[in-house]
Length: 290
Length: 122
Image (cartoon, rainbow over all chains, first blue to last red; front, top):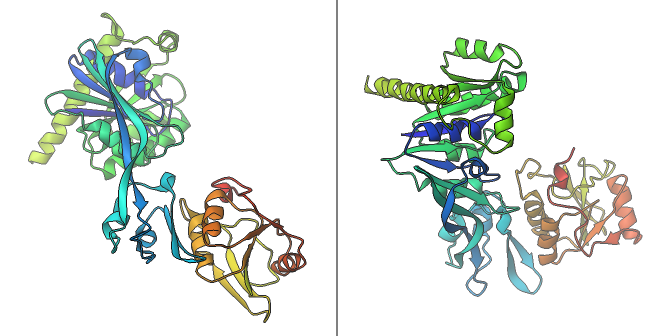
């Protein structure tokens, strides 16, 4: 089973949920897909055993072969190639690697076969263990934008025989879609505030459109108002857990500590959350069978 | 000799547009015949690379100079490759910007004078 922990709003507690959920579920793999600012390692403190450099293929133009036809610029959806008439030459082809999304269209469709692809480093993936837990995270290079590419590469580590928990990036844009695509259940973390509700509705739109079974975790429950509860009731969205708004939790978080160390109410709460997630998956599986 | 002036409307009396990549119109003016052709900028809403695409558009029309307010790094590099000088600091109407260029009052850009995405600010 693959569980993604996502949210519309940032700072709702995705990492707290993902890390503690992974710890109570026993043998699992935690993938921190928030590659722009991964932070799950601050709580799990894994022993990193391997590192992979991740590069994207970007076009490189062989000027001897290039006829200056302009096809590469025409097919580039990201405006990363310009072909302009140039004084004293047939044409100048300019490549802007930071705009390139590595789709490969230019090299595929160049009629002269003048474009080859060369790797450009965009970030790295670190892998290791934390007790029984497998761990991997991506780290996007500074100034780079192709997080979906790095996230997909990170997700190649998913094995169907191991429970995988994905800590997704915040928001509802391409990196989130890349992180939650193909998962069995999505846990949407929110807080009971107007901002929390607003961004939750955006995230719900995304998971519904992607047909991913999901439920909501209300973090900092007791703060704010009841609008999130009412919204979930009206939309028939299961509330999988409520994490109380509690000073002790904040203090542990600030110290980089997990919440489920040793027996206690938090361990019970997260174990219940895990069971509720399993129930969402079972119900979705039954719907498919019918 | 034809020049391109970035403009917020299609007429010579419209205000010039200080942005290059995301200006509203490109006004192509033939300085000898005074004939004018305005082209609405198709790259206004581009997520990225507006300057590059706009520079390509201008370069496809054999202009001797671009007259605008500011120019960003990607547009500058593209126009430079096409051998088109950029004159920055244009103000007032399109007419006034063209006059300032003809009287030598505009500065030729030796480097980009604004950052990427600066044309996206309101």
